[in-house]
Length: 297
Image (tube, rainbow, N blue to C red; front, top):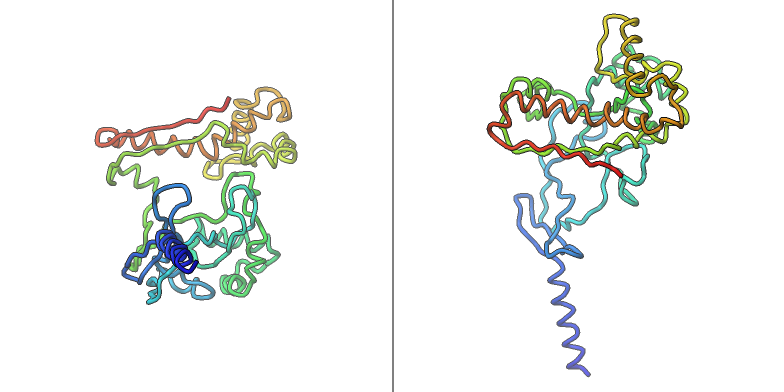
């Protein structure tokens, strides 16, 4: 009986050893776990840097050095996400762990900060010091109470922006559009892809937005379109509305055109424009360029 017990314990120990793989890194030992269905070991959530958090987030521009450790770091999937309103639950891991330890930037930081503060009932937005103090002292629950997904012009409020080249590790110091137009970048094989039904991400707003689109379609034009006057803006909006919906009002009968519109302004256009620039700047001569379109039905 003791002999069988010893065999069982040895087998269990062997299985336990096989489940984990330990490797050495510059920061310390890391343990990865064997994938449940594939013959590989997976390593998640290894902190390669330390993001400034709290008030330091507004004072330090570059990431801080990554942490170091002497005991093995269990690199398991903790389902960490950045602070955010938890909408579209199907895209968010179950039981996510919200941490501020991530870097977030925006396209127009000051104006975006003002707009968001107004939505959170802060009015003194033109006083930059008061605005800064508001963001430093507001709770994380308040700051993430808005889902940032409501804008009719398809802008995501907080998104990456061009950084000032301060010599301290800035990553994006020039607009991607400017880089593509210049052709001064390394030409690598690239695959672009989108689905014809990407606009379904806006289907939850349809019952409200169909009325708004009939009242003032110009509110739904992409924010990066610029016009000489309000008259020109309304004229272009009328042409675009007619292109997608013809002479009919936006409604249940042409809901697929509603999906098409948002597929184009949110996804397809922003995929195909870089493809065009990449080809024009000789990208196809030095590497392969692929475009994948997933058709439904």
